[in-house]
Image 1 (cartoon, rainbow, N blue to C red):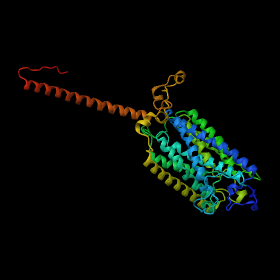
Image 2 (cartoon, rainbow, N blue to C red; image 1 turned 180 degrees about the vertical axis):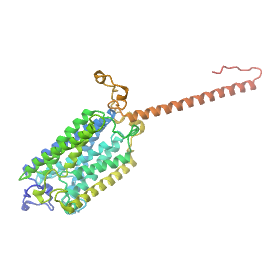
Image 3 (tube, one colour; image 1 turned 120 degrees about the vertical axis):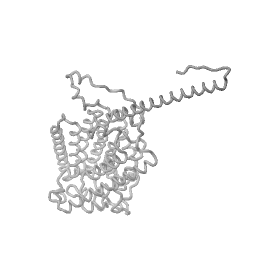
Length: 458
């Protein structure tokens, strides 16, 4: 993280470690800055949870929130145990592929780097949990909760290794000159590639494409929009905090990063709004949300100019062909690693615990099956009918909020099939029953001619 005027906050004479990483190059002012931003970045878990729970059926919203909880509990535990060490280890065994040292990080009170180590760990932990929670949305409504817990526990491996490639002093991509200031690649590309692997391994939700490829109706649009606002707030700290301090000239870059982040999100929101207005339907909430979030992810790579720090002017403006090539190599390495490792992890987990919920559990909903929470049935809002009379064709593609129409279609088909099978089975049983009664009566008459037996057959 080569930000600011390259001033050194800790003199070389004070370094007693056998190996020193730039992540610990923090004075008190810089430590306060990144600790404060770490607290704000952690609120993005709330934003992701609200956004994802608002986009799924109501019968799965609690399950989504619980997944975001275990992302911090289990994913954070493994990051403390070995994840941070694999990215920013201080051992001489460090190599360009993986870091070593600082496992189970716990600096003593006598350690002169205790403050910088704790601040750096907390900041990187907030990034690691964000990368993990991106995956939960791609596994929504159909992933076994116990299997997800195991995946969240192991998913640190997916994030920490490529994070070390880009941000660790030993990382080969950093030495080649790769630029990723605030985690567009190390956090969002890694999380997105892992989410893609998980979605492929799990397959689509039941009935997902029975009514076309359009997105399913939102379970709670208000929650989805509130989640967007919380993520918006957290992203300001995500990008501004990546200046890694405010000492020297860094505070100016932090302010510039915040402005760039806001302008980018406004532009993305404008595109999403224009996309909705250009279509035949009314304003689409998902288009608006995705437009803003997509722009926030895009600006995360380089939220402020780098020409004042190390001569680079961005990816396409003055960076040259070499930088463009290195950035492309970074994309390939990060995407390939996260996709392959996530696939292997899920394959391994599936051998222990089935990663996919059963059909009946998926139809009942994860809230009831996994957490014993039952939601009351939600009908059509009376406010809608009170405004004006709606024609039949206007409601043709409008589904009740919180209901998955694909599941309804599947259940109807299942019930029709069961009714047909039940009718066929009932007819056969009735026929066999009559044949059995006739055979019994005939045998009785033939065996006892002096005392014939008679019976009524229904």
